[in-house]
Length: 322
Image (tube, rainbow, N blue to C red):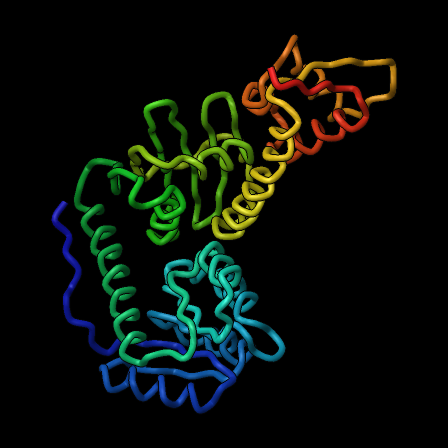
């Protein structure tokens, strides 16, 4: 496939959203000097009204604004169906957690104030180039017989990056297959929403969480619908944020469990067990390793870890170092 994006960026519409009118004016003039057409809004509410009749090529928005903040504005922009419009946060909040939150939500970049106008112009041009490439890719796809849209390797880019690329391809139905040396799995998208994920004997939420943690392998994005009953429901960015947060929480819980022991066994004394505790106890045959427990449980990793910790505290499960 030989689809190449245009190298010149001319008459591109940009929407700037910031309650700082001075900063808005400076950045607007810089972008206009770089041949961009700029629309401004001094609040997220005004910007949403503008988007009812105006579709920009790129959106730049502050995070801290009165009323609706930039994060909520981003969610509402995506909910409008503008999933393929690059979104850049420009914020005076320099905390790592804010940057991570913004990027995990699906934003394309996060710039920290004070902003150098030349840097913003460069970042906008990079996003336009990416969008032009994807549009050229889609156009070229219409002229070929294969269902494969894009294939390559991940490692330098993440599973998250690949899924966001599939989301930016637009309103079609896509199957994204991932292969590693140890496993394979797929995520099915329809108009930017996740319908199903599968890997090994897992499906749905647990499979999706496992796939996000894969570090190296190959991928193939195909034009292919999911014909069975959906096992998941939600926008890609929202689900990724929720699952990445859970992955961080599970990492902490696993450290707590590993501090208690490497192997776990049941010592039931007739006390009452709830449904989740029964599921975990059924997994413990002899001395079960932590990996075996997580891989055998159909519950989420977070539920499994929390339930196992509860059982240890109750004395129902014994943890040993060997």
